[in-house]
Length: 603
Image (tube, rainbow, N blue to C red):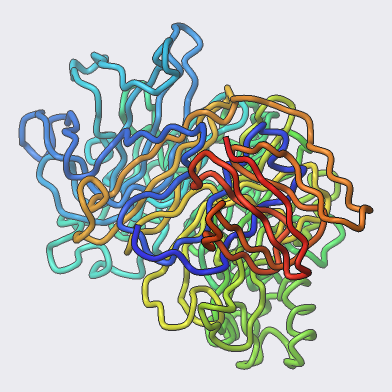
């Protein structure tokens, strides 16, 4: 850890962390060369390292099966439970970078492995397996090359809330052969591709340009480490995220684009996604969803153009989509683009409609509309799709909003920038949203002024809070220099949160110079009721005292922490909480800006 910003010691709200029995919140760190996580009851594990762990491959391009270093750029994590043994289940990890590879296969990729818990420590353990195709080992490459014609740009995906089935999303849109070929460094077989074996009537038998066989949701089977099909009937789009609802029929999908489309597919039969109806979102329509004829393969190939011409609602880069079991609604990260006008004005002219929240934001900024070059969207947000009426609202807005860069001494304790990965975890009876950042830039308060590194953070948010603010966010992880934090996944037992550290700087110490899959375990420990603080008292009150992690004050003020020799240990500005976890056991004096003093015992 290099440099911690002064006065960045504010903590998440009392009610949110109290349900955990400990406060996992960490202070913001400007730069770090490792994965920075809570040090209290949380245990950190590195489960899977790109370029280091060996993956078992199939016969590919005439080369025999073998073991080869895993691809990098870990992104989406999916979890499929094992209901037939004492193992927890299978993890499926995307590899977003597109590379030529004679053994793993050209394009992007995916690795699957099985996990169980250590019965003594609760840590996760990777399970050795022998698959039906004879491969034996711990980590297995998903075979796309021999099944669906390679894959690429494997970014987000879907973990079905009904049964744990997994889809990987092909994100960056491919406009031509050169985009996939990448001067021989990408997908080298660029011959036209004939679709077979998908089980989707409109697609099987169609011959497309090879680049048109990319940009789909692709189902895989983690138990066999093989691809199942590309979902041609969901349309060809720069997909990022999606959610399958518990009815095992309804699919909500988002495209990472400006404009990005929101799509819905409803299967005729539960669990069979080869037959059904495809819709796009139109906010000003009575039913909100307009059907697109998915029996016309050409319309599926040009999904966005077709939807825009019919007045589809335009969003600013939809990222991950996740179903919240607590309220039955769907949540969507809209990561934003700094100045989106130049990216969606052509589609606006062609019939697209701006989402209502963008029109409202433009009015607040005194812009003529989202098509105004002065309209800005630096931070993004998390949206809520109400599944009872299909209304979309902003659940939490990124920010705080700054008109210019922010000096380090004035930098806020919490800043949410460009939310991307999204998930949920239920701990006991309380459900938390999990939000990953992927910064689009560093300006306007996304990072302190003078900082070039994009420090990305992972937050928890208590879903019992109806109108959350930035102060309700609980920061639980930061990734090292150069990295994006992504792939967040809470395990069903409420004990572990998984995430990926993607494309970190090669100068970081091992293993954080590689993409890594990280497990944080211990969130189920020590549930307590909320501490009581007398906020009406005039004199300074503290709780708990003695303390181990966090001391809550009954007022917001500037605070100095002194040892018994009178040495100043900490200074905190405008705070009502003190993190004492880094202090040695002993007795300290707390003094406020109003010259009130109290004795504090740290255990």
